[in-house]
Image 1 (tube, rainbow, N blue to C red):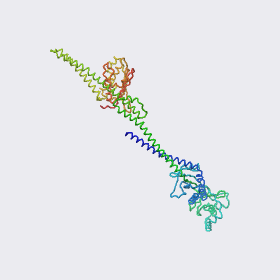
Image 2: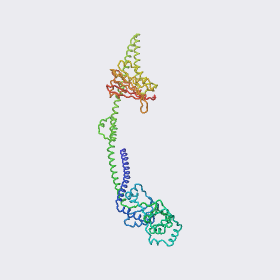
Image 3: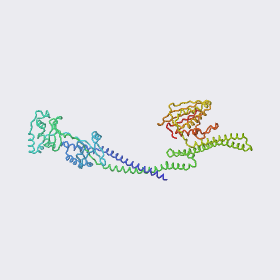
Length: 602
């Protein structure tokens, strides 16, 4: 029960955390979608575009074209006048820039300079579609940004009303300044051909950095606020003049074209107008969407909790309960019924099925070990029984000999022979006990430097007569570059002898034994490999796992004890090596012994 509550708590908390993250991310998504929908609606709204692109834009451009100067007070006043129009009731603010994106005029009073960002994509959109429409972050408003350009203005002839705006004192002072220092050069820097005679003198004055009172009166009559102290510079490259107003700092380009003067503000003659429209229904729509999302999230959360709880009980708790039952019944050893049950494809069901199989394998392995132990005990008893029988029979015979009233010298000699037999049998018992002890304790190695090829030749020399009698051919494939290594020469000789002897015995009707030595590199470690392969009768597959068990033998009729391979396997393991077997009935057997080239510690 504790595990169930703990698991359910973890799952439920995880679900809640996932839902919270989902709610946050989805709310952001909804806000973006609402803004996109609102921007789309604003783009399709003829009223908003008409106000921004026509009414507001035309009014600002008209003022700038008329004055050819950006007068903040005048622009602000125009914006305030426009705000009185009923069509402008949803306009929150209008911002006007000049030359860049810094706001210079605004419908609302600004405490500090404001700059709105326009990227390359925004500028391209304005250039392509005439306007950029988006939403304002943190505000329920739509912004429409358009670009304006101030066109040049043609100066019309002055009127009597404009002349009256100049006092007589200013007129006399102006004429005096014009007359002083006038000396026209034969060739003037800006020379315009085909003009009326009334413009020749004015052009000459402009080339000398002054302009005539008539031209000044023309500025006044055309609403160009220009100080009489304005300076004139010659732009010879463009065949025009550049006038700088020392009072306001405004710079103008002035040129004569087809007997008409034209004037245009220099440097910055374009900018942007951004109009903010109030759209209160967006906030209401967003709140409604978020509320709906919250309700949906709660419903989904409850359903998820219930569903996960049911799934946990069905897919986790019940399989775990069955696994617990199997573990509790492990002592009885009754697993067959569990093995034939149906299991799912989930991890717990697979683990349960593997657990049942493991218990059955353990039980089978245990039974095999008990059987092997019985066989081992029988083998030990067999090895001990024969010498004990001989010793017993000899003791009975000695008892009968020495029970005679008179013991002859012949009887004493016979008794000595019997005692030699007893001593021989005792030595056999001692050897058997030594072998038994060897199988139950690690081998102690006496390492010396040995060349494996030389050791093999020495062992094979002992089988010359045996192989000739059995018509067995020995074929050597030794690596001549095989390095020396650290081995227990006596124990390794015994090991090789056992393997070769088994190969000879496996070929009662002649055959061949192949011995191959090689140097191998496995994972950066150098190993010496010895393969002993014969063409004998082979080992049955069911016996291959038991050939290294003590007292396991298939040669009982030939007096086999079953200790040779068991002891050999233990010796190879003591050298930190390994042995592998490959065998098929009728196709022979191959044993591969792998020994590390590095020094082996005893």
